[in-house]
Image (cartoon, rainbow, N blue to C red; front, side, top):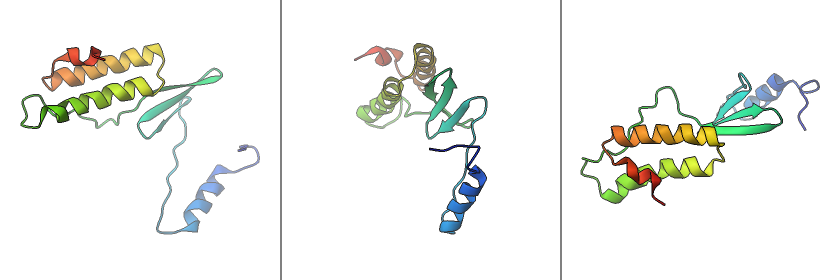
Length: 120
């Protein structure tokens, strides 16, 4: 188990980068009790963790627009991916509602019918 009073995380980080010079590790440190990991934000709340969907500040919220020449199943797959992510990350009610609002915005700004979000 990691103990920050015994282990110097900077030494561990440097040791990892010394093992194989062609691979460079980076280190994220939590800020304000949260850290972004892949496509999730993990927050410490009291004695538990809460999750939300992480989007980079440069995210454009573009998916395949309705009026494109792509097959309909490709367009729906992009939307279903957003919905599936919302439903599988274990978001609490507030974070899930916030994500649903973001998905509605993404879907409508790409000219899709937002009723697809509520379909099973």
